[in-house]
Image (tube, rainbow, N blue to C red; front, side, top):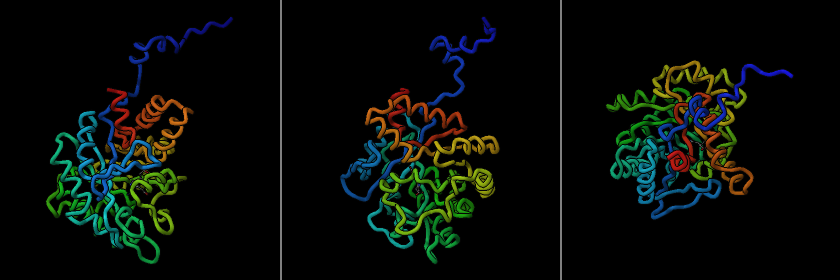
Length: 323
Ligand code: PBG
C-alpha cells in the first residue's frame, strides 16, 4: 500500500494550527459600509430587495452611524435620495442638497468615522442617467464640469474622500482639478475605475431610486467580458490622479481584482454589490444556505483575490461576527 510521505493534512489538524497557517485574515478594518439617506423626515424605510438595509432620514442616519462607529467599522459611503430630480441632477451639487446635509450631520455627531461620498448623477437626474443627456446618451464632457462641482460641494460639506462612480472619461482628472482649485488638494479620490455594466446592481437601483428611465449604462460602464480593458481604465485613472482604485462588482470579477492588484501599487477596493448581498440574504432566509459562514467565505475570497478594502452591506453583521 502506498504511504504518502508528504501530508498537507498535518497543517489542518486543529483550529490552532489552521489559524497559524491561515493566509488571509478578514478584519473589520477592511470594511466600508454603504448607507442610503433620504430627504424624507423620520424615515427608516426598509428596502424590500435588500433585507436589513434602509433608506434613512437624517435623524435616523445619525443613530445608524453611531452604531456603525461602535462596531468599529472605519468608514461609510453615502448615497442620497433627493426630494427633487431634474435634468442635470442639481441637488447633487447644491450646498444644501441631501448628501451635503447628511455629511454635515454625520461629521457633527460622530468622530473617528471616515465619510466617503459617491459622486454620480443617477440618483439625482429625472432620467436616471449618470450625467447630462444629449442625443439619448450621456454627454461626457458636459458632465465633467458638473462632476467637479459636485465633488467640491461634498468636500465643502466635510466629506473626507470622494468616490466617482459614473465611468465618465476624464472624471478623475476633472474632479482632481476642481478640488485643487477650490483648495482641497489633500482630499483623496477613490475611483470606481473598473466598473462593469452589471445586472447585479438591480436591488441598489430600487434602494437609490436610480434606474435609468430609458436605455442602459452600456455606453459608459464596462462590458463584463473584458479584463485587459480594466488595466487600461485603472492606468488612466491613476494618471489622472486617483489615489485608490475600485473594482465593481466583486464576486463575478475576482480575476479582475487579482489582475489589478498584480499590476498596480495603489490601494484597491472592491464593491460587494447589492445583488451579491440580496442573493445571500434570500437563500439564507429560505434556509438554503447558512448565511454567516457563506458571507464570511465570500468576503474572504474578495480579500484573497487582492482587495484591501471591501464595500459591503454585510459590514455590520460581519463586525458583530468577528467582534
Ligand atoms: C452609481 C452607483 C451604482 C452603484 C453604486 N454607485 C449603480 C449603477 O451604476 O447603476 C451600485 C451599487 C450596488 O449595486 O450595490 N451611483
